Amino acid sequence: MVNVEIVCEPRLEEDKTTVLVVEDEIIIRLMIADTLRAQGITVIEASNGDEALRVLQSSLPVQLLFTDIRMPSELDGLALAQAARAARPGLKLIVASSQPAGHEVAGLADAFFAKPFDLEAVVRRVKSLLAEAHHARDRR
Amino acid sequence: MREIDAEPPKVAGTILVVEDEVLIRLVIAEYLRDCGYRVFEAAHADEALLVLRQSERPIDVVFTDVEMPGSMDGFALAQWVRANRVGTDVILAGSVARAVQAASDLCDQQNSVPKPYDPQTVHDRIRRLLASRGPLKRDLQSAQQQSRSLDGPPS
Image (spheres, rainbow over the protein chains, first blue to last red):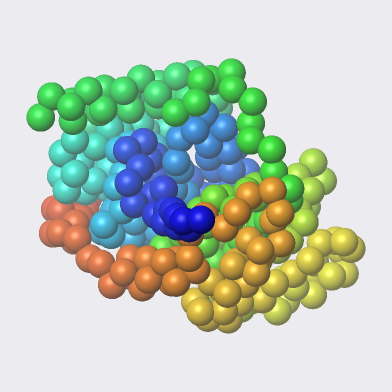
């Protein structure tokens, strides 16, 4: 009998559908992350802008950033989004806030959701943006 | 990706991972998910308490770092759990090596799913991620300057 050892790598190494969710309210973050994972999407959770920056500075693949704007960290969601856009040009970006979207958000984000948002609508938008990112990568 | 109406995967337990270093937390959490557990993540003890106080989210195991910022460290969190959540186990992991070993032991207890990859892979991955630094700092400085120049407070 031949023993065949199948060596698996962590999914995050190869995953092409990873979403970084940045939200300081844990119950909201948990609901978003849990819902996206139930759709088979890999989710990285960050509790504030500084944690998200650590993730984006690393070699981890991220296709979409979902971030709240107001967060009690050195880096708010807007500065994080601007930095992420500059560093990762193909990154899809969704911004959420309890305040109306300002002009700076409208010019930066692929989508905006006012809080409280419809989680199903967020999931639909995440999936459509991931599909766009996937097609754009295939064309290259 | 699974279809939107797909059944959620069946899991044999729920673990709350409490760790303030995001790059360690995400790797440990992902490993435990790959082992078949449902995993919640908290960045510090105060977040963990918010999850634990929600009775509709039963937690089987609290997997926590010892040293954490905030009002409580891992020891204090463990004491709170033992006093207020009888039946919830607590695993205290004071180092990356111990965290990986504890996660591997939990994986061994999961009978329905084989261990997805070697714990050494988990350890190597954490070390690699902690060492990695991209070009984002320059972009961040630029973004922060732009953010400061924007009119009005952030929403």
